[in-house]
Length: 226
Image 1 (cartoon, one colour):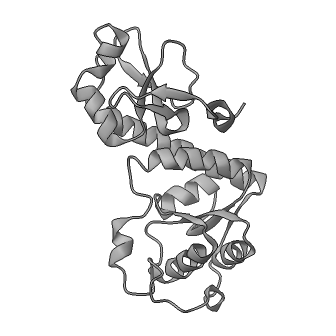
Image 2 (cartoon, rainbow, N blue to C red):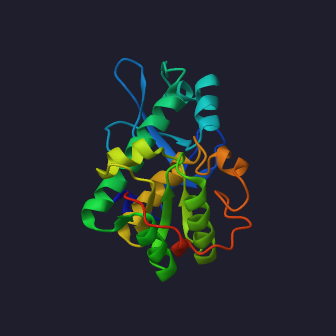
């Protein structure tokens, strides 16, 4: 059973706000025998789960206010950098999903192929290297906006290249389907820890990363080797 299937119509109570939320919006934690608090992103570890909204602010609040101990009715010792640990784990899960998607043939890379997939309406996500060229990125982001394709710029070119097994991964598209659904859960949880749209994109010249003011068609740019 996939993570997506396991979380449909299931709600848990957030330790911080006490609000009931869908499991897909939360991070599960369990207490270790030594009193440590371990994140269980795959929801597989034994023990009573403690649930916190998938955001840095919520996890930091749970640590600061000793909410894990209150929930477990035992003295626990969550690390001060627990939110950093969760972010690192989420990054790895997102990149692993992309690697699986490429092996399954539902992720394509390269400027021209990405543009074609977006135009066709088959693209669920446009994944752009955060540090890639603003010109090519702006054209694809503008095209994605017209097609309501979601955009992620949370990873560097090195991150994407390693995950996809490519030499220079800059532009990629994840096609609609089950893998895209699973990726969406992971990357939307990651959005609580790092922006999916880097702030640097908004400082690029008009018509670049934001896609504002660009009337150029993506087909005008030569395809890259990624």
